[in-house]
Image (cartoon, rainbow, N blue to C red; front, side, top):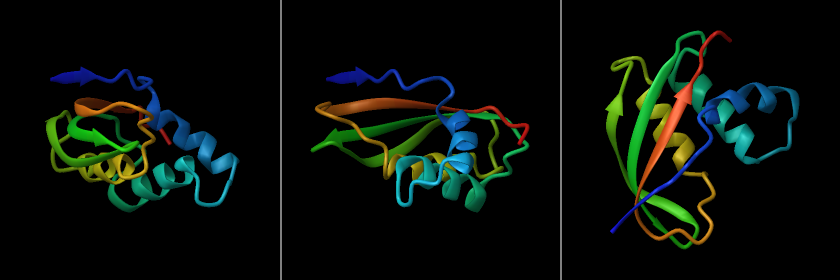
Length: 103
């Protein structure tokens, strides 16, 4: 059974908030590190992952759509997904990421 997850369309937009608020080890910090490590924040992209949700975490993620292939946003999304809080969701979920660019 599939459960679509409504992640804020601008999930990557909070990367900018992460730069301003430095709560060590938080989700925002993870997003910032992943973007800096894998992608150019000046570029924009949309990535859709399909993952297994269990025990409040995502696992076995795979990229099902990537608007900027070869630019590292798929790797950044996979990295962010490792820390994305899932709450009580279980089963297969689709997780959209929007990287607005311009940074």
